[in-house]
Amino acid sequence: MAEFGIKGTIFSGVVDDVHAALEAGHVTRETLEAALTKQDLERLEEKVNATAWYDVFAYHRVCCVLAAADARDIQHFWFERGRRAARRLIGMGIYQQLDYLGRTESRHHTDPDARFQAFGRDMKLLMTLHTSMLNFGEWKCVPDPEHPARYRVEISGIADVPDGIFIAAAGTFTGFGEESRGETTWLFERPNPDLVLIRMQSDL
Image (spheres, rainbow, N blue to C red):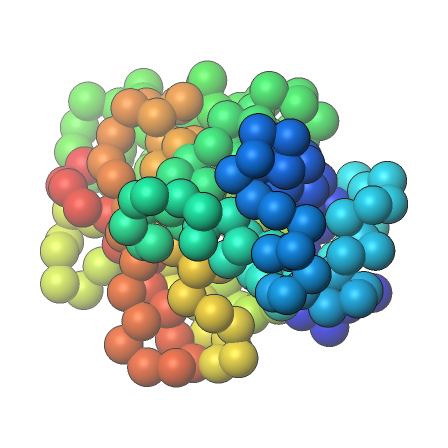
């Protein structure tokens, strides 16, 4: 298992996107060979095992090739990649945590404090999905000390992992929220190399 691993269910998405980009002419074989390692290139030609772990740095390198071919801002690229991943995972129908999205506890509360507490419980359930997709870092969801009616996700132990992985995670949280409650966007911050914050952008 990769020390910094990403689950095959996510890795398969970037493999599909690379092959689509090659077919459309947005990326060339020469570009891939210049940017990727020999092992990366081999992984792109193999059938992805959805339950296996793949090197997150290889995933990042492949995504960077796609990002370079994308005309949009790099942060937008990563955020939308995570958002699309959320929709893809929901559509796969293989994760029990995602079956829960349509009946989250917080949506049934009108009292603001009860809704806030229920939202925290909902988030802790969804966090188990993220920790099953990425096998590194310590992830926790806590009330945001700067915004009493919001939560934030704190991820530590990730000093070597590039920003893009966590910008995509913010997009994924946003995508899951759109499916279950239609609530706030989540955005990425990195106050120091070993701490990432993914923060709600509006009050509950």
